[in-house]
Length: 291
Image 1 (cartoon, helix red, strand yellow):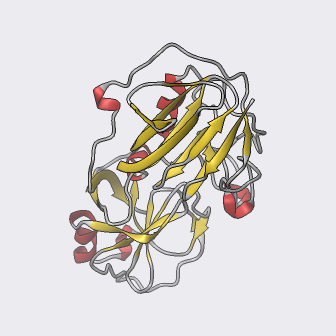
Image 2 (image 1 turned 90 degrees about the vertical axis):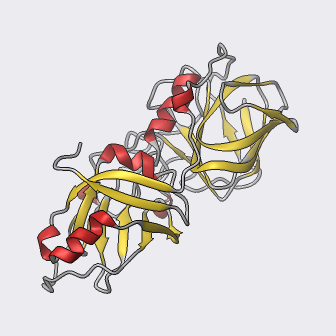
């Protein structure tokens, strides 16, 4: 039982809910950028929440299956076709032997998650299926998918038809508002820069990936010019470089860094940011406490 990749997409990797607990070894937790969508995809086909899903970024994949199975695609919205016939992403999709599923034009969001009933046949590394490409760790051979890859399926089967609720469908958006608290080095910045961090819209640049988003906005300058020692870095930290540029750490970010952190995003809202693509805007809404 397998799934054969015909077109791998721009950056498609297997992820789950991550491998926390290894930051002291320099290994980020990784995991699905949009954990809410990943869990929904697994739920729709009856898998456990921690089962591996295929994370598909910006451009869709196409593949052929060798076994009947049910799949669910959640998160980013694509035009989806089975044997060139348009199908709805709003419900589970049943595939027969030799069927080809093709994901066409991206309609909303940036990352989709594809779950197969019964799960993929992958090996866990440090307790997780998640792919960390820089370390060639986890997932399928520690890398992004390539044409003609054969992905094993574990106990593939057909599940009862299940639909998404209206609120579970991703709507088109070009501006993402997330909750954030002042970061550990917030006091290094003057009042103008502090206000700027929480009042302006930051544009996601082309230099954005699973490690971090480079954001374009008015320059933010630290008034404290002290040299900062490398310290612990968590996903969601907005770092300010010496030239005033902004870098938002994401799921695969390094576990330590040397740039001051002016704010930190609520960890639940990182899933919201996963659907922001280059050209979209991000705004940080200040709160006193985040999860």
